[in-house]
Length: 151
Image (tube, rainbow, N blue to C red):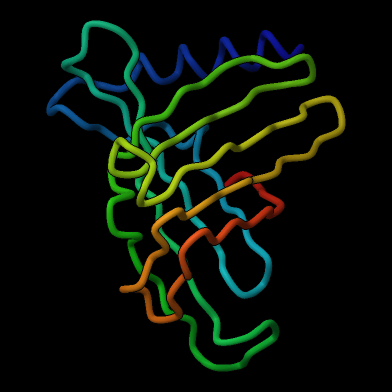
């Protein structure tokens, strides 16, 4: 079952029509992860001019001032995390997606682990240099472990 799901995801990526270099996927690799204060949105793209399958994420965060706040959230693109290269691999119970922002990880990097058997996804994301330009900045060496859902 897990292999069928993985193959279906990869096949659907190849079926999208070719027009420009980075094209949105069919949404099957998009994720939302959060803790009630920071909600990360991962939107997958593929390079239709690459010789093999080349994937990337645009990563944005919607920030609330505090958990349960009634103030309007602020959605922001995370600097350096547009077209962040990613690697997709199978694990014993599902799949793992590794990504690096700004191609070197200093702006941010992380892993999304999907466990298809236990129906669970989790994001482990780090910002070694922080993200000082966000409305609610991430300090240097910020690391978060958050639960995820399909978008």
